[in-house]
Length: 375
Image (cartoon, rainbow, N blue to C red; front, side, top):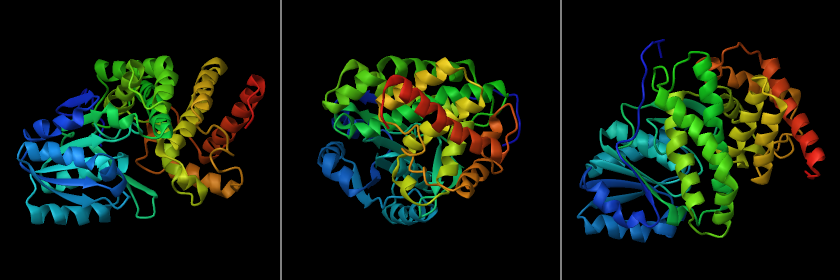
């Protein structure tokens, strides 16, 4: 993207959130089209497929369910585009987690169809954005793919999301906590946001409000999730994870945390078992170190991450046995041309990123010892 002085803010066409709103999916989707390609994996379909099907059928929407095979890759998008073409779909529905949603957005763009997103977890900020994170078939980060518009509909059923494992909510909180850390860094550097312009006042304010809500309500929401109940705090955190984080990262900007996350995907082994948000949590801490964040603020993040069971040590990140060469591979991938690490106000070397990754481990273990917490 070329440099510009234009301010740009983008958002989905409609955002709907509440307990039981899947029953209203047909009502909202019917405004977008009458023939739907519905992308969902078997696990998600078993959870709420019957309810979604009934809602679509009640509004006269014909649909074909396509089984999502698990990776947001170019091959998977192309496979599903062919199904959509045969069906002559005028709307694509992504039903599931972040990778299914990113895949649905890619399919909708190629089909020039409307896009409806129905997340079943609050684990990422993928639902609202006009981009997908594309991985190889083996799960290694490849690129960001940008689209001509955001999803037409984002429908978030907190009654379904509260039944998902709390680990997913914690992952979404970690992803969302990166929002203001990265946006404020990109704004300081006068870097472009993900929409190709400078941040508006609204874009910046949303990112800041996202962080405020999470520090106030994250633990209450996590406890509600453990009990599989919907509370005001749970609703607030689901909205922060999904809408505020989505708008905040896209119209504010990304920086070091997600670049370091992308670097982690270059490694093979146990780290691939961690969620997007768990890797972003460590990347956020590394960026805070690089930003020369005061100790008191660092420890606020550490305290919440530990309470949510997020990885803040190399051992928890499954990298305690990683070689120096492995860590340099992460750093070099995080500094590739076009990566969001170049949105920081300072230049970085691979060595500085490796040292920041190690520093997070040192600071976290010292904090845990001070708080009497065992690893």
